[in-house]
Length: 128
Image 1 (tube, rainbow, N blue to C red):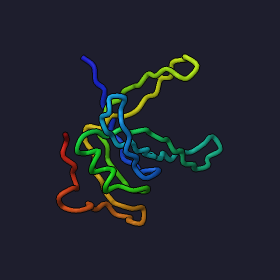
Image 2: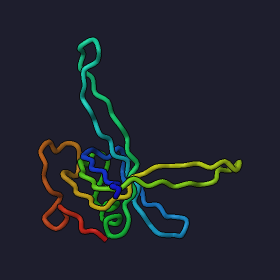
Image 3: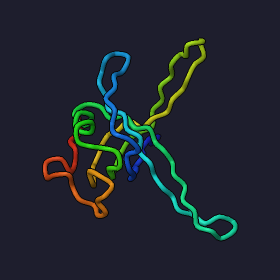
Image 4: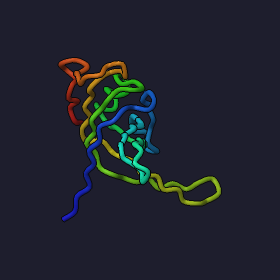
């Protein structure tokens, strides 16, 4: 048995982008920043930011592109996938991303400091 599951809580680094696969299937691409606080060898606190490329498909993609914006705090349940493409000079390029299973928005903009739904109908976005 194997398991490929990722859970993230973070903030959008830019407004969502509507893209299309090679087959013309629309999806929403978002980048999510997660932060980790730690202490270095000298005893000083520091924060490390990690960026995650996330792809959202189906009805969730439409919702994300329409309703989310840079800074929005989200919860994502996803799996890791990879895309292999041939570059212009024939080299293979591998890109890893998270394919969303469930997307939940906590706030529409960074000025909100407590978790709150965008509205009652879309707090938990239905899966496609």
